[in-house]
Amino acid sequence: MQKLVEAILANLPVGLIIIGPDGRIVEANRAACLILGCSLEEFRNSTWGELFMSRGDNLEFSEVVLDAIQNETPKSERVTPYRTPEGEERFLSVISSALREEGKISSIVVLIEDMTRLNALNQREKNILALNHRLAEERAESLIAFARSVAHQIRNPVMTIAGFARLLMRKADPSILEPLEAIAEETLRLETMVRSVADYSAITVGQAMQVNLWVVIEEAKRRIENHPAVSGQNLRWKTDCPDMNMRIDRDLMVQGLAELFLNSAEFAGPGAQIALCAREHDGTLTLTVTDSGPGFTDEGLELAFDPFYTTKTVGAGMGLTRTKRIVGEHQGTIAIANTDDGHAQVTIDLPVNGPEMIVSG
Image (cartoon, rainbow, N blue to C red; front, side):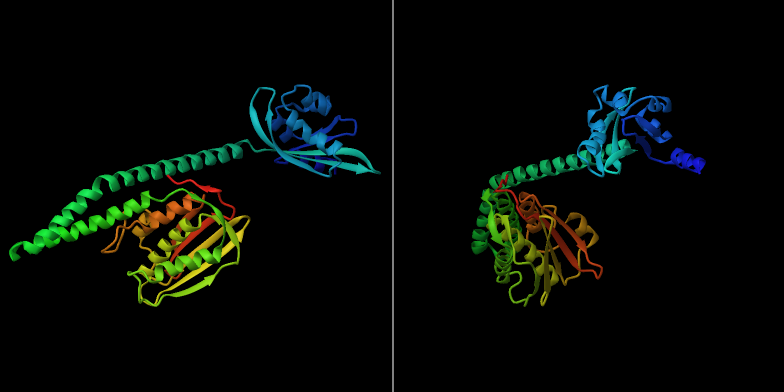
């Protein structure tokens, strides 16, 4: 039996240390030696305090055992930094349990797992996420600056060209009406694009306040139902949302949801059904918008949020771009996908208690 216990201790993938009531280390396995950088001889001839607390550089690690003794907790667990005698930095998961007999501590069992590699991977993932976030912010800022420049530099010349084209059409010889009509039509498209860019760059700073979710959704629905692009389509709505408040810029969020609903209605076509489902979990509201249309193409899944991407013959393709920016200003995220049965679905995650000020570029 003794040999079996010794074999189990020797082959445990985690470090195991048993400390007696006087603080002396009674037992330690091979994994503990490797993780902590100490020999088995050092363990057997030392107390916990002599081995780890006297050096002064592993106090947080040592406190796990002190917690079990002083706080009389059945188990203490934490992840702590640890420096080996050779100076190597590690991150360890340490669990200590105080075993008692007749109300007194008889021994303390310490389990140690080396989390250094996992911690490094987690840190690398955090760094990548932070970099991606910074790049996304820089891209958004560049787009805003570009939008302002376009709106300022192009709007007046485009309107002037369109005006002269229409004026010439009234007086021109019928033989040149066709090219003039083409000029007028293309400048109208440019005007629409410039207007969309100007609207994007004009999203302004707002004061967030507690607003009922139903109120925002219903206002966004009303805003699009009389829109020329979907007027007379007999939209059908299926709404499953909790009666709850959240801190948002009401006007800005209504604008963002209206853009999203309009996009769904346009692509789903006459008689379309748009299903809205909202759920709150751990301070985050998840709103899914699913329409009965044909879903996103592969290209659409990749480019839907890019400015000026559109599959329509009219319009500038800035609707979802504006929605994404508005959601982002509320510290939220937006994602698109196709359902299993091939319909388009948009998912928005928003903090219920968002920022007090919606700081827009």
